[in-house]
Length: 75
Image (cartoon, one colour):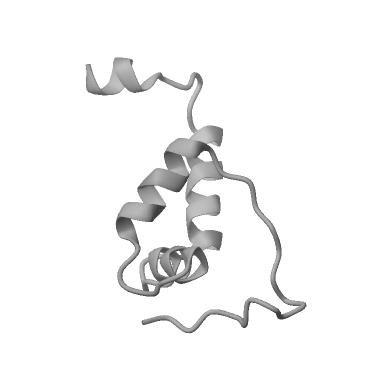
């Protein structure tokens, strides 16, 4: 399990999520996991490279004359 910061730590911050997202996070919690544990686990994989994702998105937007909707791409 990913170690999260102590819940009383000054390193903790508040984030707002929709009720639907909270329900999804609840389904991912196992045992005494916190939301911080769930989120940390989700974003800590070796394939999670925020800078690369951001650069890829910027490149795609730059090379695209028009953005397409999900429905246009996937039907």
